[in-house]
Image (tube, rainbow, N blue to C red):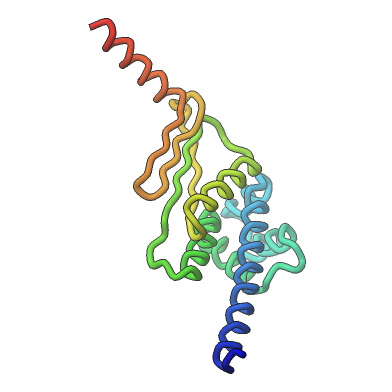
Length: 176
């Protein structure tokens, strides 16, 4: 038999986790909506009013999106911080898990990744390193192909440029 306090804690934790999951889903949906080129262009257009931007954002989000998240997104868009949505989502998860510092996952690719590819990377890295990662994606054509992933202080370089440099070094070592 559990004590009253244990039952209260269990209910409170269940409520917190349900709300957190709802917010994470809303952040994921917002991230997908903000990746739409038309919406991104409209939100970045300084000639558009805040009301127009807010209306476009609301239209792009699901009708059942939590009002707290919708309001936060409106504030972020108005401040020009729409690009921070993934980082904020990661920080919320990190705070919920009790970690004091965010672990940043920086993914650099030779070409733009699709949203599906980004989502697969997010899932894989979250599975490996835990929730609370903040993700940033960038493009560096000099990689020629593959990815360079830095999570915290760990670097995974699977780029064509690095493989070619390693091959050049091994050939140079044999020739000497």
